[in-house]
Length: 233
Image 1 (spheres, rainbow, N blue to C red):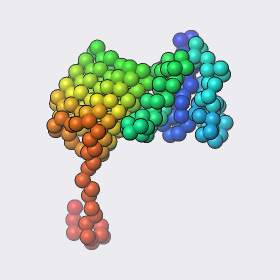
Image 2: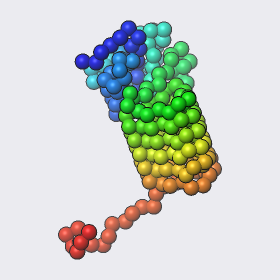
Image 3: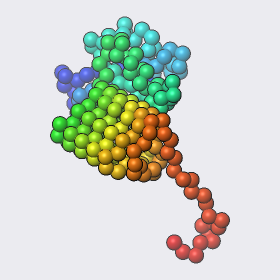
Image 4: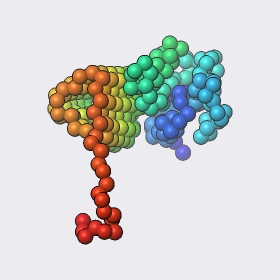
């Protein structure tokens, strides 16, 4: 049983996919009683079930009447998806709509995440377990981390960025808005990554990147022989 306290914030999550399910579990069970999920919301035309994971699903249109912003806060749980050419544009747009409705967008930081001194965060932040954010880092609005990422000291991450698992951003880097980092990608020290850049799984960035760049890993083709034909490891 998760202990609640009078300061617990009641959260409405925008989204009903896997990210929303993960966020709902984190808020309810791994926030130290800071958050409690009250409902899920999506646009009415996309509502399938009226209840998911024990939470009601309510239309985003008119949400402020059923869940007024003076009593509820929000989190937008939408993964990387493009809008107007921007890699995280869909999530950014719904964040904008939530703010226009008057909602506070929360920042979630798992109790076990390591956060350095004088680190600054925007809103709609998601930092689950096993992340390390070093000293003097600045993170803008709507930045999502999956597990086991590292952001080095004095790095600046602008708004609307998504980090997959195992990403390493070295110290004194600047990450432009709307970027996406794939699993186990990394940067050298002092790198500038231009806005709206896609960095694929395992890609190593050793020089500055222009905006709207795409870096994908070299595909690895299978050998001509089968595993039962191998002579050794």
